Length: 340
Ligand code: KG4
Ligand code: ZN
Image (cartoon, rainbow, N blue to C red; front, side, top):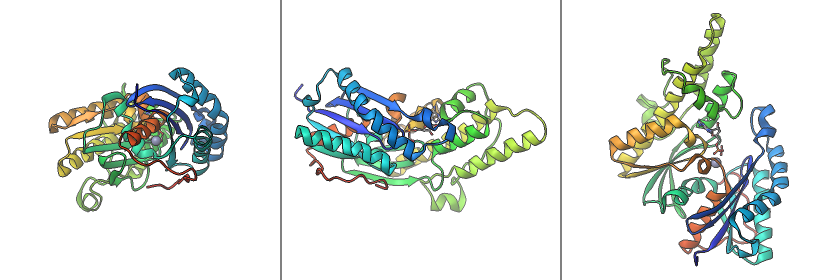
């Protein structure tokens, strides 16, 4: 009970997330998504997202406080995603957090969205072992991070050189006529299919692998799937959606898990944590577990609601900052859309 109560605000993309955490205990995780408003555009429209954050902010804060059974004045510290993300969307969250912190005279912590995706696992599985390897895969990022200390030392080993993994899921879903966001639909479709098409694994061999050991590339895979589907349609035969989904999904998760385990082996790291919306993928969870077991690496995967963007992850990292005695930010802390 003497651990600090931290309220976290996340608005980097299309989710308005408000989380309340005490220590590593999750008290509330309220999320309002504007995803429905973006469906007809086939992707997130920044201006639409910003306006939706503005409308959802106060009701979502109220809901989180009610769920947690707290008053706003009980909060000991505020944490807010300061970047990376959509500039206008980030600004709404940062402005809200500053207004609350300033009016209640409480500290404010500017949070890196990617580090928060890593730290959220503490709410489910306790303090992260150090060092931990993190594989973050979402609609906006695909990164391998070596994490000696999630509050101050997060080292990027590699990232996508073109599309993010979730983006590839979303684009391939569109090719297959599945709705946006496509990841969950591909996951479901793949459950009824078999891995029968050998799609390319980008940056996994030869010179490409040498130059991009821990980087990813999914745009060639996406194009290969589109070509395969076009050829099938031109032949007049039906497209085997489930098999294409399963084969595409296997190509993505094969590369992700292979490189994550290689990064663990080469850096002597014995713990891997997954994060980001794509970490909800059922095949990724299974294959990662198999390969970790074979390599003697312990795997930590937060439950799906914690993997997608939410406020709890921001509160989790804010809470860890307090626990480690990190200094809070200033009241003029900027939103930084291109934060590394
Ligand atoms: O982390 P997130 O909610 O938002 C950001 O992009 O930051 O991730 C959303 C992404 C979308 O591309 C969505 O298609 C993907 O995560 N996704 C999935 C699954 N659930 C969500 N991809 C594959 N399999 C899933 N089950
Ligand atoms: Zn995210």
